[in-house]
Image 1: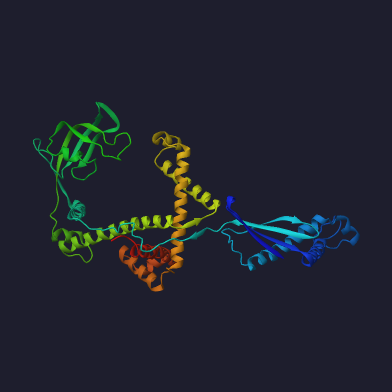
Image 2 (image 1 turned 180 degrees about the vertical axis):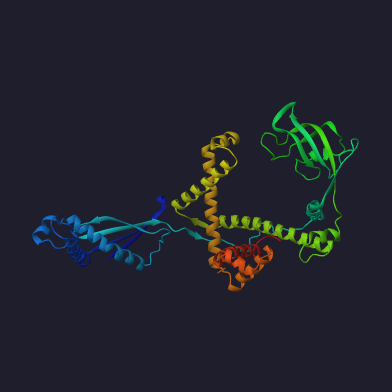
Length: 428
């Protein structure tokens, strides 16, 4: 047998070519002829029991070649692997006979090219600044307020009393820009807690000091709010129906007792826990964002090739996800394009770019994981189960029942890789 390999880069394919000739092919043809005779179906005779004279009438060269090809496929495939090809397949190689005659059989095995990556620098990257995280007193107080809300007492204010921060207000509103009412700017009998930040900046603060009845406030829509409204000044006509004083319990040890939280006895302990929880969440978010920026830098410094079929598959998946998101918003794709001003070409280009980045990110992370041998140990997996059980307040055995070790290992592997990139990169 002879072996040759080739990259069909423009098609995103690889090809192994195996040629069987000489004595090996002659012997295969003889074997094929004998097998074809036994497999031949001749009317009036049982398979393999017809006389030679009848067999000769019905047996064709095409039958022999077809049988010989079937016999030769596996040995040819095994032979190709034995040559330790430098072009590795991502998908199963598909055989195709490109030439078959009395002298030789030539089989092409085609397959999607396995992605290739020459990783660039992935440690000591200082072009991205290391994030710093902290927690403000206001953030801690906001969380405590949400707990206080569980035990809130409400008292309707007198007719002459004004709106104060923390009050719940029942009111109608209608918004105007340049004296023209805008879509989505009107609502009746809406209940709003002043200071909840439910409305755009400035709206709730402008309501403080207002009383029952009609009033007007002026606010400016922030940038990035909505393409039609962002940056524009609006006048809102209000009609306040009811102002309710919300009386929250004091943020003290008694509140903590009422909440009955495990291992938390005092308001000081409670604040420490809240601060630690917020800090942990922030660190996770900033770490992921930082590592994402580091990977972008690694991609720029790496040579990455992946088959056309791989990116087409990724585009197909992202396109379906995008269309599903549009449908969940209650829109058709046509309505979405009309509302956003995007064309099919623009959407396709954005999805294609995202698909490419997804594949590049996966290949970079996978390559670093392999180079650094980042694999969770049995002890680390067990510790992860302990942490998950504690976080969800359930028994460890229950977590093991619903989360297979393989899944936990995969998630832990991603976590370890993120930690590695975070610890070994960044401008302090």
